Picture 1 (cartoon, helix red, strand yellow):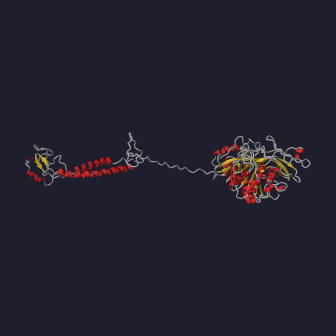
Picture 2 (tube, one colour; picture 1 turned 180 degrees about the vertical axis):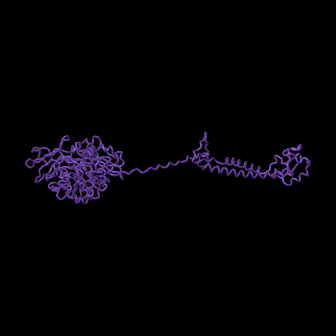
Picture 3 (tube, one colour; picture 1 turned 90 degrees about the vertical axis):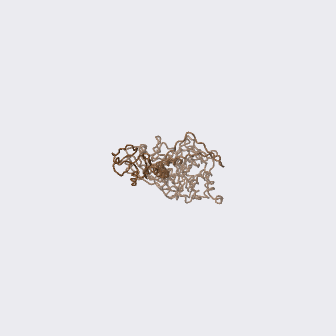
Length: 626
């Protein structure tokens, strides 16, 4: 288009110059036509007409001496003696003379010459114009010399003909493609389909947990992968709807999950992981001279922690432990040794270490709901009378009370012969682990734990105690993040895997407060995990705890240490209901008694919790100093 415009301008300028030149030639041409013409040595004045002569020309015959006998010569034949004279066959018509001119010939020649000349002059006067959509013309071989202008700005040379910048070509618009199917976004750093490693065995072999993409049909997906629907539930904390499916034909979860990677109808899928509460068999009776000690010595790292027994005359026969049904990959949690109830139990070091007498004058956890997600607790135990605010069974089947769940609930809110950290708190007992009343292992799955967490959040829990350990779980992590967003403080055991064990979850999750265990001398529990994720330590070695059927047992491990911290969190929330997870974590770590060297370390975290100091930081100065 720009070329057409340039040509139009060029032709218009040429026409302008051509018309001017044509007018000039048009004035000259008539004058030259009116000049006298020469014929045979005589002058004839013929006005210029289209026929060469006018009607007045017959008058000229009388002035000539042409014989009449030669008037009718042959057409086209020249008469002898008359150079250039051509005779015609019609009388009265005068001959035409070559070279005489006349008509529009001179004017046309002038216009044409004017147009050509105008174009040449216009091109000579115009600057070169380049099409912005065309590439720039090549530069001359010799660079132009800059012209230095006189004036103030002597440092800026100006080119005689500055080069135009190259046009910026707009990028082609992105090609529109149909939007992909919207699926739930998996956790960062994890794939959409989680296939357990070959060495991982802490999951239900014939079950999977599946999250479907929008508009996907559950029946079609399960039929495609030969699975049977067991249950389906919406988990509000995680923000997903999960299908629990059982695999047919004896296929393993690892195999089916590998095949699901190419199915776009599945938003995410993973195993139904196993978490275990494992308790060792009771130890043999201690000698009489050692049984009288109130606090036994801690066992070495290679052996299980020792537990003291009462004197034989005061103790009932020790219960035999049933076979262990835990996964071989899961570490032991806490050994319990059953003893018969006594009329009056000796004071324990936990009450002195945490200064129960002092802190209970400031707070007792009044009306704070603490959820214990564990095995079934014996709600008829004397230590737990009047503390229940609600119960939930996510497992089903036989709801027999279990030693571990009973011990954790008693450590938080016991109020008979034992003392709990928060005796006025209210218990939300959520059974997510299966097991019987004897001190044996108990297993829980991802699906059961998520159900218990959702129930606890719906019941208004402010504290959640998680005294179990297992593999990393994407769904559990999402639920814990949802609990944190609702103001729930989750406290978890660091794990009893040992000093060189890999991190255990949910203790290693950033949305919980991880707790390790110490003994009466503030020494670390030998089988506790180590890691930078540990926040604080708490008493957790040889702690006298409640057991089903009104009995008591010594418990050791990070499980009961986490229960003690859960009770302390309830005290903090009673005085500071506005606190959330990070605020509570900060209070506990800043007020902790530093152990194992200055600063935070992988063994003790920030140190052993100091209950009076933590409450003093949470309370106003007037309340902290009565």
